[in-house]
Image (cartoon, rainbow, N blue to C red; front, side, top):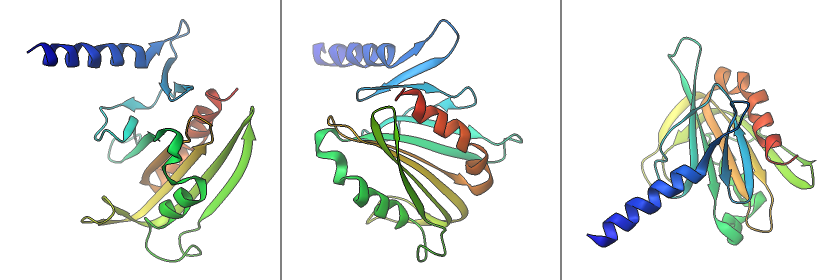
Length: 179
């Protein structure tokens, strides 16, 4: 009984510390050492796995489609490093790089190196090694923020038009934690 109460109290404390509303109404949240500002159109949802440090969804204007945004942080082990994760993200699509319009770009924001990743085509959702479901017309927009405390991986997937229309908010989100 005491353990259950302690776990509940710890979970409540984590939730209270995790999200903060600033005086200007902006909602911020922390992943590793970074404090991100949540875009207004994004809806925070409960993480579906302990590997996910934060999770959001965006709905299309007609509410028929949604995209998912997930934050991962694996600590100093870096979860395989930048290039390994870029390759893994590309591998979640059917076909060669040319077919999925695979692009990655390294840049520096503030003092941090960030790698942005894009791909589009038939996304194979599901866990590696498990059942995978093809989702044609899907885009991926990712960012890997490098840090000595472990890289932070941010991945948005969803219908291509919705992901493309959300790209500015995605970049502002990344910049919000690095300036």
